[in-house]
Image 1 (cartoon, each protein chain N blue to C red):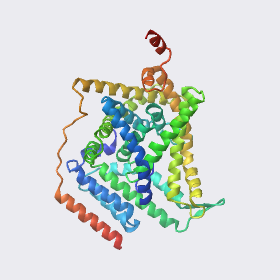
Image 2 (spheres, each protein chain N blue to C red):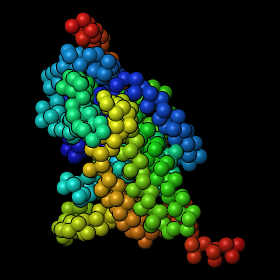
Image 3 (cartoon, rainbow over the protein chains, first blue to last red):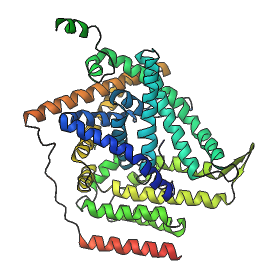
Image 4 (cartoon, helix red, strand yellow):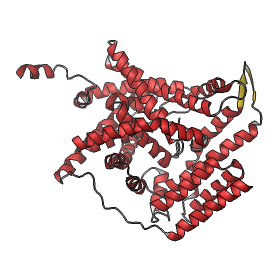
Length: 231
Length: 244
């Protein structure tokens, strides 16, 4: 769910752009540094961006009848960390705005704040917390993806509420309205995206273990210890 | 055919050979007008201008244009309706001058959306990325975005093919299977994207990847006539929008 072009009044559009900018610039710096040290990561980062875009094109069956699309930033936050996702998410939003007419240019800042900043950080925070509490990879992934999705939707609803406070009950009432209307599609989607993440990572731990170890998602388990002893 | 109608339209557009900077200025002007001019008559005029320019001189297929606005329109209508319904202590009713406010919101959004779509359906992403580079966005960032754009279509094609194969094997016949298939699909696409990136990287390393992904820039000179017409048109829009 992205805010459409022209939907936010100009001061809000500018305000959210200013709010999202430091995170995106920080992400851009991280990417520039990474590419300077390892020129080959340009292609891996590009692949990660393309995957995030494509993940949002995978349809999931949903309770509300129509199918819905995952946001994909939670998976990206677990795999590539939130600062990088702030930039990749913004690039994906730009492409969605221009290739799918989904989202917009003046609302890019507001959407980036919800989709590329709050979503990945909330998901990643929840992931680290569940892992620190001793949970396995898959529960952590479920919580990360579901929460990244929910946090994005809650942030978008609050952005809309701030822009369009209710005539009688103010910003709080408006937040209730927007949360309620979009909950119909977004809450089942969050659960669905969490489930999809579990299935995705279950396949990845079998088929792409070396990549997950390199990204630091999985600890190099049995294979690493003999190697250390050998040293 | 690449599978994304807007992208196809951009490559086939009659304005494809115009300078991206010219088109960027025109569309940015229209987007700003759509945002700040009063909805009546400003938004209506901006929307009209964008649609007429796209379907007329830029020769974008009307079907593409109409299909592209369907999804954003669903959001705009839901959002606008929610914004003008007033909830207070259990009672639900229309906010004061609900119709006018909803109309304004829809007007701004449709006009802005049409202006962005005019840019999207006339300027391929590669041209826009080159323009971003000229706006001092770091080269590494533009290159990552460029790889993302170029890899999109391959991955979308993979999604389509894998999904077709899964469906043919009853992979989407029930909810349970559908979720399991979608998980496998996402995993397959992710590992494919990594493989592809690695193969590309090895190929480029063999050709001496040292200074980033350099491609020959196409030179598209800016047209004075186009810029003058843009300035005049936007000035007229602002004048009519403010005075009426």
